Image 1 (tube, rainbow, N blue to C red):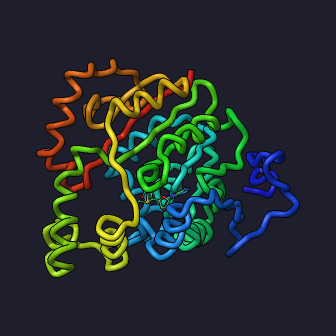
Image 2 (cartoon, rainbow, N blue to C red):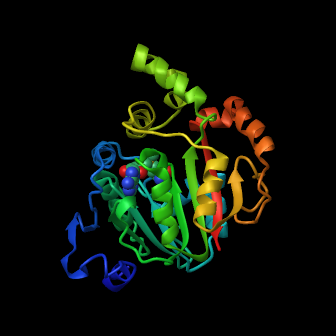
Amino acid sequence: MNLEDLISPIDKKKINTNNISYFSEIPDLYFDDKNSITSTQSEFYNDVKFPNYDDIDNFGTLLDKSSKSIFAKKLDEEIPYHSKVLEAGCGTGQLSIALSRYGRKIHSIDLSKGSLIEANNFIKKNEIKNVQVYRMNIFNLCFPKNYFDIIISNGVLHHTHNPKLAFNNLSECLKPNGIVVIGLYHKYGRIVQNIRQFLISIFGEKIKHIDRRFSENLSDKKKYAWFKDQYNNPHETKHSYNEVIDWFNENNIEFINSIPFNFEANDKLFSKKEKISKSEIFLKELFLIFNLRQIYEGGFFVMIGKKK
Ligand SMILES: C[S@@+](CC[C@H](N)C(=O)[O-])C[C@H]1O[C@@H](n2cnc3c(N)ncnc32)[C@H](O)[C@@H]1O
């Protein structure tokens, strides 16, 4: 991306674009929101570069890995060519990079200098032209209103001091007809993980193999990032389907789909599904406690909406 492409999405009313500071060639557009959770997370994720790279050493291996994730594969199939995409809380940038083909312009933000440097090193090494990373706070976004075609924020809002406000901020930057994809910890889906967190807090790392990830063939860096993210995180909250439906309603977002509640493997992510009624969703949510996939992933759900 050239400088004009880089500057163009930055709202010049919010930022003096002649006066941007950089670290490792990454624009630092971080503004403090005076909340200690944001600064604590910034320091925490500066050390914990999540999800980190393991045996991914080039763009080809990254694409190959992401094609094995149904979520990343479907996003790549369904995000239109030439879309303007924001990934909020991109961590080390794998998803952004995996979605960067087909003339899309990907703008990826995070608090963590350490993670952004990892992302940018990979981008430079692999000569990827259309992903721009920035250090930026979801609570002080520097993008114009109604700008992005697609906004993705996966595993991020539940680490902030106010997930609903963070969602409102992201929605402002989404164009009418644009799609928002939000991944969050689920209040029941995460119960088994909460039990593991409790046991590890009592008995320590020696019992960490109660989490299957530690028996897998992952690099030490990746295991470290998972352990810290899941068992030492300074702040996390849990959410529900109806709570996010309320966020959608307040922001003029129409419900489109959700994983796992409305989704079947052969479905399109962005094709509209019927909202599940309150009584039916309660049972489906409760069953997440026993869902093996949820137990492995740490209790996660995804909600997809479209701005009216
Ligand atoms: C669990 S990681 C998820 C990374 C990536 N989305 C993924 O799925 O692998 C959470 C990320 O959110 C970022 N984050 C937390 N609060 C943020 C905020 N207020 N603004 C921007 N990024 C934030 C953290 O720095 C961290 O990299």
